[in-house]
Image (cartoon, rainbow, N blue to C red; front, side):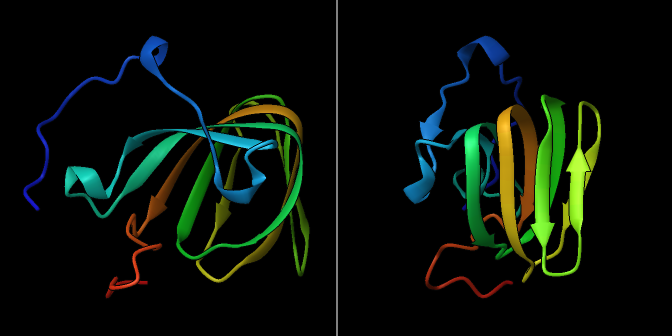
Length: 120
């Protein structure tokens, strides 16, 4: 796929959609990824009364914009507030927790969920 052209993505036009089976707790507004011909996926996320487990299938960085996010791994508890980041390498088992938070996330590879993905 040919990469998309550079562009500005306006916050006011962000559309949040439920994320996987945790849609009542996590919604995402997609910014870029495989549909742009990119190996990088990024977007905004809203976590509301969230507490759910996940195994990260990609390298991920989370920037907390509002609220507080807790990521509980097998070895430690990571707490991040506004302008703090959380780094999670691929394969990390994590429980995400947040009462009310807005985040920016970036993941690589963006195509982690594709059955024919050769990366990751």
